[in-house]
Image (tube, rainbow over all chains, first blue to last red):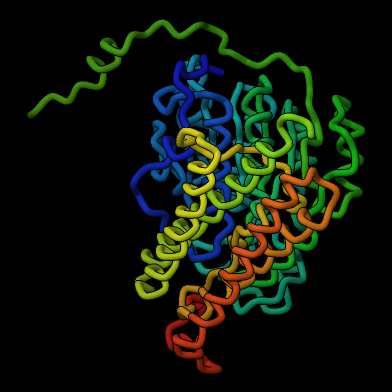
Length: 279
Length: 168
């Protein structure tokens, strides 16, 4: 994590002038608010933070912050973020994704980002649906969710991202809920502070295609246990909980990967390499 | 009375008003984006009203303008009692719906302060809480009166001939 700002900034200092174009009532508004609050809590400056994303509703988030942003290729946000963090370790790098971008299109990157344990904070806004493309079943959709695009349900078992993250080596695993923006901000701040790959799944309802998710407000509750550093114990808890335990669930002690060879290139050298020559 | 109890109460009240201010402003932006300008304007008005309340607390306490509300504030619930829930919006909502949301917020705020006024806090805090509860009661009355001046939504207010939930 980079050094704190000399003059403390507020959450508003991390919000850009672009108005989010999510649906009214979307949980992602709250996640944006939590991200900016967390960055303010951490005393960071926007120029020392990069927000990297893929494709989907959630991946719009970099444009809504004043930090450096990279809105990349579908499912490949973690690859871009890994390169960025290894090359520029002094930056605080947040990665934003959704359940489709993160667990399906980018599923393989998810596994290996956990395994590599680069010091990133991966925020997945999970609404159990592909919202941007109008409501198809995603990897975390319940198999019996009946919709026009999957009559009777997809019949496919849902993905369990927190357990997969643990099994793959993530160093910090938490679940948050967008209905509690202050609690989510605190979890995100803790995730950024924790060294290595921190994975925060934020349950973020899609009020347009999954209006049933309004009931998450009643279902989300604080995890009744303290975080553990025992991955097997954390996995057992997560596999047997109700999916709505909110809080930090695992804090590991693995050493973050910082790259086999330190980055040696200068900005000038890079600019020369990528200089466009007219022809 | 412990030295900071009154200041803590007032800073909580300030955070409550500021959180409500920010949420209404956020709602106004969301509905601007969806071209629901009338309701956006109403939320902007509500935001300005809450901002005035917040400012008054700062003036009363002689505090300088605070840059942001405390991040981790210990509400009994996830957010302050006067903060409208994030999922309360609909892109086709009408002014009446916005006022319904505001009414619920004011009623919760009233109950919050009534609870403190009737509790075991030091007298100065209870007195201030009783005054704030009275103010919130007045806001409840004003919003109810405001609701009589806007059209009541028809039963099919959320009917959209080109809805987003269509399989194409």
